[in-house]
Length: 424
Length: 144
View 1 (cartoon, each protein chain N blue to C red):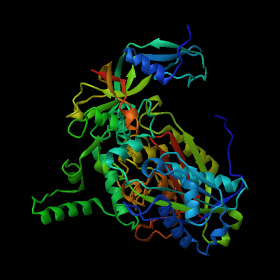
View 2: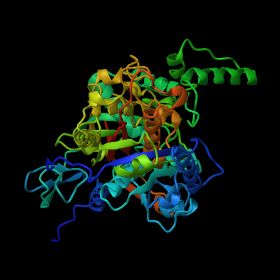
View 3: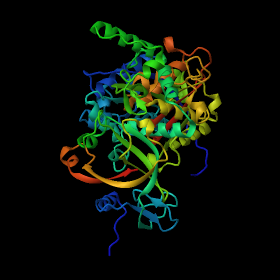
View 4: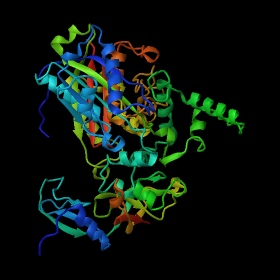
């Protein structure tokens, strides 16, 4: 590919960010979830927002046709929050839908076409049974030769895990430690789908057994619990239930403005200084099964644009749809060496909230939940709050978060987006 | 004779005859499985059909209890899981396929590097819509 350094046509800043509570939300539709995120975002704009000033919407959504039998989600979201007749672009790139939407919003402002846009995403998934949701998600792989061969999403990532184990000697406990870490973060996130530590899940199981009068289980520690197939069954070997993110309903959005007007809305804007996006082949056509090449390309673009390196990034929200995905992400981003170093980073406390490189302080997709079309925007919401010191109990306090990054993968690596944020 | 197009449908038709066919780039000799009309290596678009030996080895795999509808309809479930894998054929390319005849009850016994040979299984089509899903198709599989 041409080696020309790319930059934004003009500066872009984020001045508001919000999300709906994530979880099973049977009584709301996609557009109502989006409205919840919009109102939460509006509250976050320090000096106030007149929604009439918003010029366009970019709405990520992966599968409303499948889950809700509803298309044109972009326009419906615009009308729900009273912003018709503004243009509303619906963006689909599987699990990266809303990061691509955010990036398109950035490009819209950087181009000079707009001064203020709303970008985010929404997904309503809990409508369908597990079988049909498995089917809907599998549409993100190549249906002509991957899902039709029997691969599901947990299965595709599981096969990457087996390749990682074979090549680097990674063990399943390494992966389970990623889940323990992300649950310990998400337990402090009131909007998380499962705001509970693994210890909390164990206590809940014990309480349930006592209530039912059935034999009360006991485990020495979290790892022993997670290795107990009665409570943590295999979904797609070696992926167990607690290696997998949940099926979640939720929405998130951010307010993007041209840099020159950012101070009209807040004294603490968050600037977007790097953005990268890449596409990738289906899994069997890649040169590697232990890394996501598209993520490496996207990261390289973002680092070059921002003129920073992995060592400069303080915290990151990365795509941990499965525990192995976080292990690959922190290597693809250059934070840890691919292999054992990345696999053991969580277990060694390097990526915990008080570690050297806090990863997924929101709880990640694993614990916060993964409404696929909203996930990337929700990562950015966490970055907005963390960089401004507004993350409550889960606030990272052992460093000055002047640079942060989000990494969002579409499908099993056929799309990747990496964006870098700065607080000046 | 009119050349058979380098499409998935053509590939599927060969599978019905229990033939594993790839497209070979006339420019750079790269092989593509399933066939592609455009070479990913050199971007050439002059292809020819070649039949592969069907021999390969397992390079990554999983054992799945909750599969897509086509696998559920084929009788697979949590109590009767199946193996899906990525297979590198001896001619070079890799492909995704079901792996038959391996110890799905003990996935830890399934070894990467296991030599495999192509097999062919009939099951319903991969589709949301029932009337399409129930149409039987021949799929590529592998077995030790």
